[in-house]
Image 1: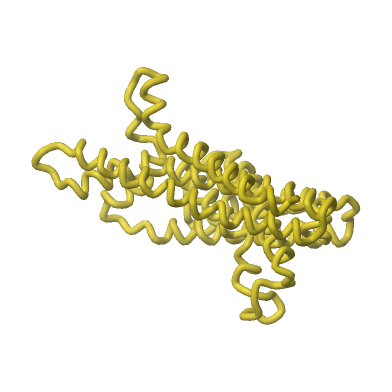
Image 2 (image 1 turned 60 degrees about the vertical axis):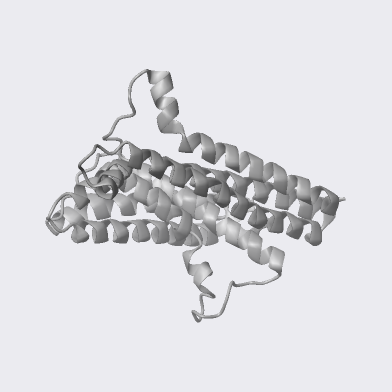
Length: 287
């Protein structure tokens, strides 16, 4: 029964993801129609950035949906039916990416055509399409690599501290299973501990360690807390998604390239989605 429904489930997922990603991709146009004024040129994500946001949101929503479907299928029909759900989720990602590719080309062509005569088409299009933060970096001679490295370290630190907090709090205080079918070891109490540890780590790093080193990144007072919450949430979704795929394939780890930790995906599962959220947070100057 599940196998017969599988192609339709994939089709529905692809359609849903494509609609979400497409609506986000044309947001600059919708903004002009709704607000009756041009899309702001100083928007942190630019115009092409909305395509990335749309695709990311679509993938995240489909991942969460797949995990609920996986759990239900495993309980009602067994492992094989649940594995079909995981395979369907993986197959649905590629068509959505192909739907987004023409939109990226379309936006690039529009930006190219809007370039004033006599200016460099490529340079002007890139500056118009790029996020405000990236534009500032491209149009200044001052090196920004130090600030980029500080943010990169911060993102990795917050995500991994959330992982560590969730693990240790869960081991000591965990009672309520978070996703018993997909990852039996994760608990709601551990997740809450991850949020708390991530928030404390973010404030210590951005408001104490970096200023103590003479590095000021600006940001807001509440920014680290918001980003810690987003990074932790993104990390949990990435972690559970990888667990679902591994369980569907019948493997404990994604590989054996890192002794004691498994494969590359086992180490980066939480970082992959969280890194995108972290980058958007940097563009928005949240922390």
